[in-house]
Length: 365
Ligand SMILES: NC(=O)C1=CN([C@@H]2O[C@H](COP(=O)(O)OP(=O)(O)OC[C@H]3O[C@@H](n4cnc5c(N)ncnc54)[C@H](O)[C@@H]3O)[C@@H](O)[C@H]2O)C=CC1
Ligand SMILES: O=C(CO)COP(=O)(O)O
Image 1 (tube, rainbow, N blue to C red):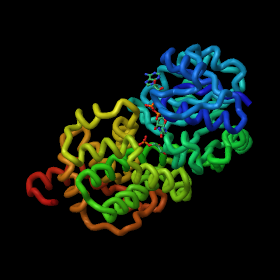
Image 2 (spheres, protein in one colour):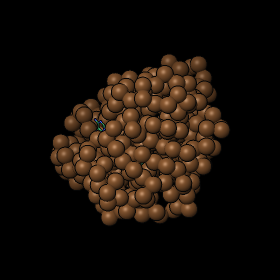
Image 3 (cartoon, protein in one colour):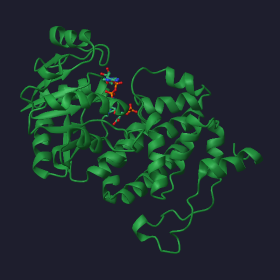
Image 4 (cartoon, rainbow, N blue to C red):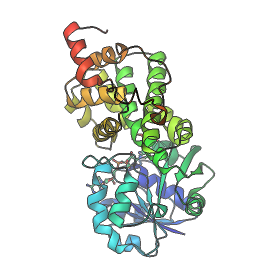
């Protein structure tokens, strides 16, 4: 097996190591020549995984054609908002039956599409030729070869199993799952929920607040997922609950870090400028909100994250907004269970109506 990995950042570098440890030949495409040279000559990428020695089976190049030659898998590890423009330049170089693999956890801003949808469109391949790897996989822990499980999602079981075999090691245990929509959506939305949990942590709230946000965050993710055709059980698995817990509870998470800085009182510009690596929830929260509105799904946590990041809502007001929403049952009807009488009901538009109310009354902590 041979994999071409595009993107030598934190996760692309680490996943190359996983593939190589599983016995797969890897050529890693790096944008920067100094990164490719360092990987080839010193087996290290100190810009993204300091102190980690990569297996000699990982070779690097800045030439996409060289990376693609003979590849069975084209693994994409770029920021979500840069996938389309890059992939457009690479598809003509790909071997005819190659399987595209997305490691990316984001939604495209202009189109509100999942990454596998972008890949199918740009590469002009059917969904069976696209797989997604996702789960509780903080790159640094995996680079240190700490044990973790993961998910390989593909609508074609044989392809999923081939990829599973290509990346299974003693420290990385991937499970297959046919629910690409659910796995991919869960990976994108958890980044937004992690920003919210980071805000709560930055405000010095404790574990009740964190657990409440994680659990209600999972509920709103599953609601949107089901509306888009996902299997609700996916959200209690590794791609759902697993990744949400890992990301929301880890100081390694960039999304959590952005939220925490906001909660501590930094401006949005300063909170974003404090990291040079990718925090996907910052861009993806808006297309996720757009999808939710299109499908009449309430996502109050996503709404307040959008309001804090883009509409000037102070983090403390976001708490008041969430806590003072109208009383609800814990379990909403799934979209397919809604009675026709409910279908005209307008979703509780947190950012628009409740925030106005909070600002006027100054309620909340
Ligand atoms: N770091 C982690 O723990 C994990 C990250 N992911 C996901 O993997 C994806 C990539 O994230 P990371 O590797 O962590 O990000 P990163 O910020 O560490 O690296 C991003 C990579 O993309 C390249 N890049 C940036 N802008 C580009 C552009 N315009 N054109 C071409 N290349 C460009 C950078 O040079 C770098 O190699 C994200 O969607 C992230 O959510 C998924 C699981 C774990
Ligand atoms: O996706 C991740 C862990 O599974 C990494 O999370 P961050 O992008 O927030 O660091």
